[in-house]
Image 1 (cartoon, helix red, strand yellow):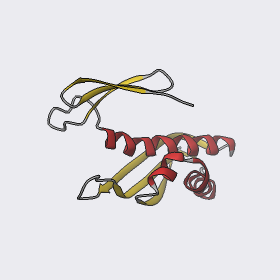
Image 2: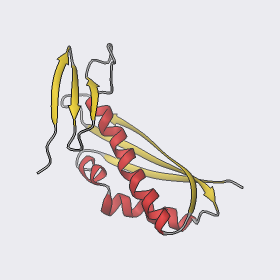
Image 3: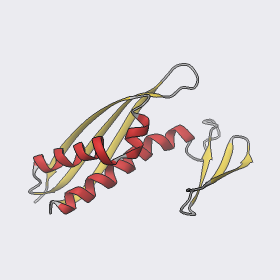
Image 4: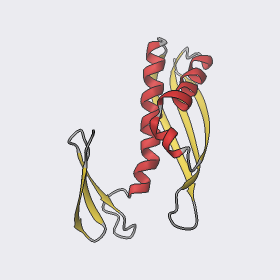
Length: 137
């Protein structure tokens, strides 16, 4: 079983330590804004999860990716618990001779098989996926 901890420091601020031992400051007070909020972390975790999958798959497919950016955006419910209800994930793939079918397949595998964050958030949110490919010389 993996384990983490969250320690209150002040106001709505906490120091979180994940199972890997890495720490980060979270702050639920958007006025104070001393760190990302918990729901904000879920949003960017989606980008990190699918980004890791996609770059790994594209490397295995020997695609010449020089940059990958995952842009994530979303809308939350108006009433508590204010879950994510609508999410958009856009992969911007930059490289030389990138095969669009390889990118589509990598995103599909992440979306349907590998990205545990997407699988988790998919219980409350509709997730729209898109991508662009930018060729560099």
